[in-house]
Image (cartoon, rainbow, N blue to C red; front, side):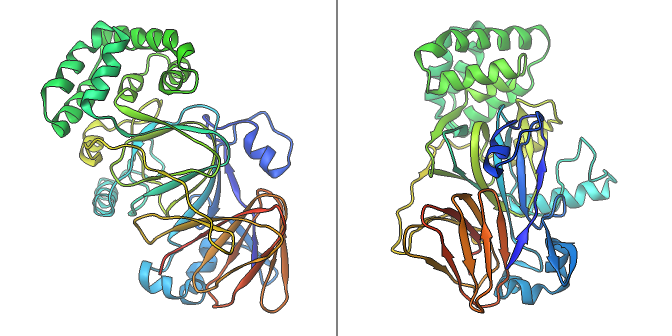
Length: 396
């Protein structure tokens, strides 16, 4: 077992208090958006091995078969997933992620074009896809997937904004995929006075209507309008479903699904990637043609995951991929046992948990602290009445 020391990323949208509160530390006054827990080269976790400080990506790279076990042959010589604590104080950008094939081709093309990895106009930071799962630690609001064209048209019509009329006509007159694609393309191509006037009118309309809908979509749109004045992403957001997660509930977001997190704190797990295509609510680079190529124009209801507890206290969140598997343990008087057949990271979010290995060695984790367990085939016991522990691993 290795105790991990993790990097907190200070993105501007981050909460100033949520991650410090989880860690039991004083806020710095600066935003603290994401705590990265894993082996992504952008911010790998640090640990002690053989009396020296190293990073988890270096540990895995030095002996993938020993660290990852069967996962090395299945997924390659790197940890297949990245775990995060995400704390949104402001809305994140509306975004979508590529498929594996799109990521590989996009990464190769940008490398061939000589675009530096840290360039603001870079779309692909690596050659991997980025399906992800977010599990709420507190009430968590977001946008997830397209509304049906009819539903989006009804919402827009209810706002009585003249500039939305062409979009409403598109949504009402064309087949689903064409309607959604044409509407999004029209929104992203709005410029000049028309764009400014339409966004301002939408902002006023959702702000005026929000008091009648304090926990619903209109309040979420009003929050985005306040934080991103003049951003056409506000109009794009009207195409998306609003969702509010309660603690313990989760959302899975596959390739091509447009989404945005608005506010709240959660545990997020994803394939080991940082590839993002943005389309609004952001000052960052927006590549409209590439975004339109990646997005899947298909209406869908948010699939909120509410897992049932197993006999050992594990709550598992099923996903349709194998690169990551997330579960949550709400520990009671009886310890839980996690197998050691795959690499895993354990993250404590409440109480104190004691990890005990087969050789009797122990490691205590308080809230916000985490540990890495290699795939050495040995089981680990979790004990700590009242503790909550998230387990990130793979499906073999």
